[in-house]
Image (cartoon, rainbow, N blue to C red; front, side, top):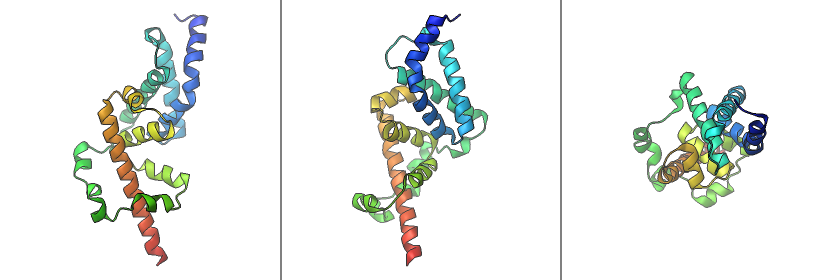
Length: 185
């Protein structure tokens, strides 16, 4: 049974990560109500198991619980259709060479006028694994090591997923920009 002292200690350590927890759940689920539910469930689980928390990286610990809860939620809701297998990624046409695919170079990407909401929309088209690492790195600013702890994969896997996520996002932006330029002509 948790004491009032345990509750205060939990709140002091974990509530400061509430925004990041919600943002992660939202990025994974794409639904505000579901994200709120997942965060609530995750924080209840975290509080139940708070006595097993040995200290250290509080953000990593709570975000891991939020992540796992979100994946369980996705599994129960049969949303696996937005997952892409490694083989699909490896053999997709998006992995052609940049020059063959007409991909924009970094200067062209930087000069393209792309709003935050457009980028957010493009990110939503990525698989959950890619969206997750991209969000944790680029939006929340976690290190590769912290992301590896949160996602429970190796640092190399984090780096690989991040690279592929960036590549896919770049390709999506390139394709969209090309379509817009074609319409203008």
